[in-house]
Length: 43
Image 1 (cartoon, rainbow, N blue to C red):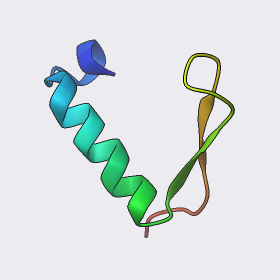
Image 2 (image 1 turned 90 degrees about the vertical axis):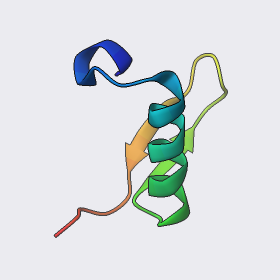
Image 3 (image 1 turned 60 degrees about the vertical axis):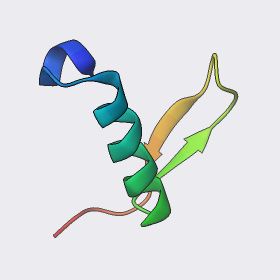
């Protein structure tokens, strides 16, 4: 994500935390082998 979006690692972490807090994404699995899953679409 960092390379694709050309932003800092902190920005990616902050954005993921924000999306998770809003219930838009959720983490499945562990830190190393887990993945992010979209819970609801943004309109």
